[in-house]
Amino acid sequence: MRHIWRWFGPIDKVRVRDAAQAGAQGIVSALHHVPTGTAWTNEEIRKRQDEVRAGGLEWELVESIPVSESIKTMTGDWKAHVEAWKESLRHLAQAGISTVCYNFMPVLDWTRTDLRWETRDGARAMRFDLVDFVAFDIHVLQRPGAAEDYPAQLIEAAKERFATMQPEKIAALSRNIGAGLPGSADGYSIVELRTALARYNGIGADALRSNLIDFLSEVVPVAEELDMRLCAHGDDPPWPLLGLPRILSTDQDYVKVLDAVDCNANGVTFCTGSLGARPDNDLPAMVKRLAPRIHFAHLRNVRRETEGFPCSFFEDQHLDGNTDMVAVIAALVGEERRREKEGRADRQIFMRPDHGQEILDDLSRGAQPGYPAIGRLKGLAELRGIEQTLSHPAFGMK
Ligand code: DNO
Image 1: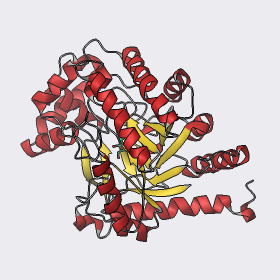
Image 2: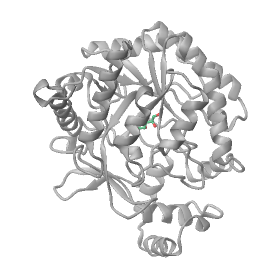
Image 3: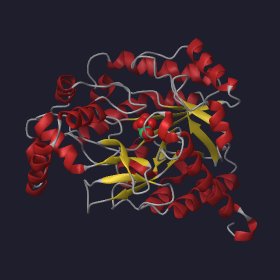
Image 4: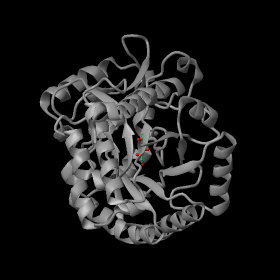
């Protein structure tokens, strides 16, 4: 695999040099400062390329070009936004960048209730506490009809939890859920969040899927013509949130979208951390099924803390948690071998160590939540150790 590292640009407290020292071979980045719906210009792309090169690596892949709420709902300026998206692709192709990750999660991108939850050994991890989340939905956001979405026991637990919450806890929850996490396109106050949710009234999973397919029917041919690959990131967590539909949460979800626009340019960002929060997602089997279209893998592990789903979970160390990481990597390495035999130019799959716990000096560096230097370095070291072992002739994998 090609080992890359997410860099948020000059605001990132982890430098490109740190990534190179950690063993990364390249950088994945985005122009987070460009407003959603606006095309990325050649100048801005070149500037970011220069910033990355100054640290000794290349900008190899984009995560993400944001997809606007107008596109997802097919309202307002959506047509202009689709044109801007295509324009960004053309400019990226001119700059030699040919793989683009994106997501189609309505309103909220990845969602956690706690960004610095203390683990047993004093590390900090990101966590999704279902009771806190339901308390936010029913008592802070006061979403109409919210209580109908949850079982009685959970509603009761959320009521009790809310009664004990201090104002700082409520403010932090609102910030973590509404204001968005690193990489998210937009942030919302409670009032804005209510308005954003209202835009989806009447848009269920089928309608959202059909909007995604319409979007892809526009942008995938452009990507194909430019010899680029698009890859859709799954829902994180992989179930409906705040009454919003989510349509890339399972194997079947992906198959529907891949079949609808059936070509290599319409691909997958396989995120084990996102999809792994659901016990019914068998990740190694999913990798095998979706393999030919996986252009990018995000490798991290979650530990589910309650039964079924939705559930509470935290981001465990890369080799701990519920996901069988060795089996996932074996499936990815197997796919690379298959591509090699097939003579595919895109034989190598991009992979990044996704997230990391804050450990050691991370605890005082104050990097982007989920994106510390040492926690990710440790993850990358472990993941590439597995990959090298599985690829070694002595191990016998052909
Ligand atoms: C979280 C990330 C997401 C992801 C986007 C892709 O760390 O995996 O923010 O980058 O959803 O568009």
